[in-house]
Length: 191
Image 1: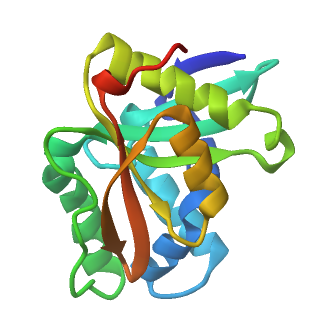
Image 2: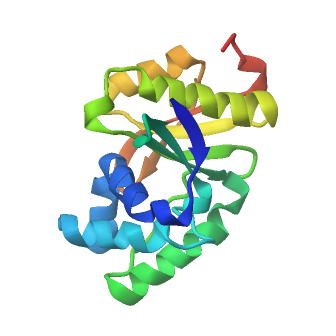
Image 3: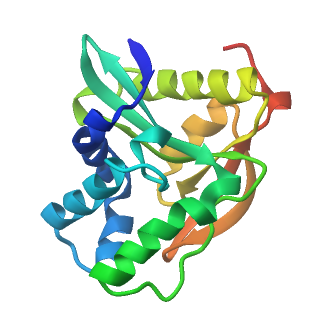
């Protein structure tokens, strides 16, 4: 299994994986449940720099040369500037959002999206990706790694907590109830 930074040439693949995890949110961004338009929307951003979904903020897990998982992580302090191109694009091309909550802030690297290919699920790929992210951001950088998990997905929350993430607070994002979890350097467990 290979863990690597994404490149611009990965944009289409990144968009497909990210939609596995955030299709409902993208539907709200574009104002309709349209898979083709959602993919076009995400590919637009994954292929560019300086936005929260950029390939620059993505990591890829490959197995035998094939991508099997993707994670999107960025510095929470940069959320406002990284989100602005997305909001501008939504306003210019769709219905402007009345408001969008801030899912992260300064003081953490934010794991915005993590997605594992359906054919690779249940094989420990997601856990290994999380271990790699914890190793890179928490152990090496001595930074806090944060994420939101849907309250309707107790299995995902159990996995994150088993990995060492701890509950910080309840949050809302585009109408969804979420749990904000963090992994601090003091939480480090043997990886």
